[in-house]
Image (cartoon, rainbow, N blue to C red):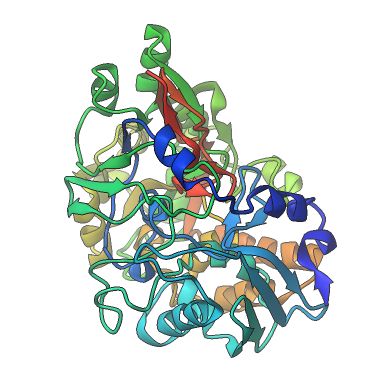
Length: 512
C-alpha cells in the first residue's frame, strides 16, 4: 500500500510532519486559562442540526464536528481526525489511522467503530447528496483495532478523500441518531449549544479538545440572521468576522476597522436556463446564445469582485489544475456583441418584443445588471428577486426562463459537477439538467485514477454543457471576509468551513 500524501504530487507534502505537530499534549489547564471572550461570527447560515443531512451549509457545523480529512488553505487534503491515511495502488482501499486521545463532547473516546457507524448511517439513512453517492460505493468497512479504519470501494473514486472532509464524525449516542439528530455530539473545539434557527447559535468551548492550546476563546456565537448589515455590525463591535460584498469590504478597509481577506477558492458566477421544463423560445440554443452575447461579463464581474475578479467561461479559475487555457481563450462571450445577438434571434425567427423573460434570482445587485443588459435586445423581463428559501423554492418549480446566481468554493471539482447530474443534489440552480451522456462523462471522470485522463473527462463534460447551452459561466471572484481589528490567528480557508485541521476558529483569539 502506498502512502497517499507521498504518492500524489501537490497534495500536502509533509503531512506526517503536520500530523506530528497536531499531536495532543496535556495542556488542558493552559488552554482554559488562555481563553478569553466570545467570538462573533457571521458568514453563512445553518440549515439543520443533523450534520449528515446538510445541503451545503458548512460555515457553522465544523466548529463542533470534525472529519477524517480536511481541506487545507491551498486546497490539498490533510489529515484531521485521522493522523494519517494511505491509499492502495489500485485506488480501492483506504486505511485511516485515528488520532490517539480524541474525545467526543460527552467524554467518550473516539474509536474506529464510531467512525464506521457514521459511514453506515450516511449510507443507509441519508438520501441525496454527494456523500451518499460516494458511500454507496463502499463495499467493506473494517476496524481491525480501535484506531484503524479500512474502507474498500467497489471501484476507484477519485474525490473520495476530499469528500470525506464533509463526512462529519458524530457519537452514535447523539440524540436522534436513528432518525434526525437533534443534539449532535462531535469532537470539535466547540460544542453544540443554544440554537435559535435563523437567529444565532452559541457554541461553548470544549475543555477536552484534542489539539494543544485550543480553542482560544470561551465560545463562538454565530449570527444566522438574513438581511442584516454585517459591515455596520462589525464597525460597532457587535461582530468580529463577517462575509461582505466588494463595496462593504472597500469601505471597511478605508475606515481602518478591519482586515479584508477572502476564501482561497473562488465562487463562480453564471447565467442558467430552465432545462427541466423550458418554454419557447428559450429552449432554442440560438436564443440562449443571443442572450449571452448581450451580457457584458467584464462589467458584471468587476461589480462583484473588482480587480480580484476573473472573466472566464469555466467552472474553475486560472491556476486550478482543471482550468483549460485553450477553452478560456476561445470564449465567444468574452465581450458583448449585440449585432451577433440580433443575428441569432433572426435565425431563430424570434421577435424579442413579443416575449417576456421570467428571470429569478437572489436579492442581489449583479442579477439586476444582467436584466438591464438583456433588455437591450428588446425582451421584456419580469425579474423576481427573493430571499434564499424563496429563490430555491421558485427555481424548483421550473416555471422560469433565466437565472443569474453563483456557487461558492468546494472541496473537490466533483462537487461542482455532481450538481449538473440528473440525480445530483440541489440541481435547481442549473435548471435541473437531465442528460444521461453528461452523467456518463462525469462518472467516468470520478472513476479515473489517472489525473490527466480524469481532467479530459471533466473537460468533455463541461464542453457538453456549453454545446447544449444549459448554463454559461460569467467568471470568478473571491468571497470577501472582513476580520475586525483585534482578532488574531484567523485567516479564511479554502472553503466556507470555519474550522479545519490547520486553521480556523480553534486558533482564533480576541486580543482587544
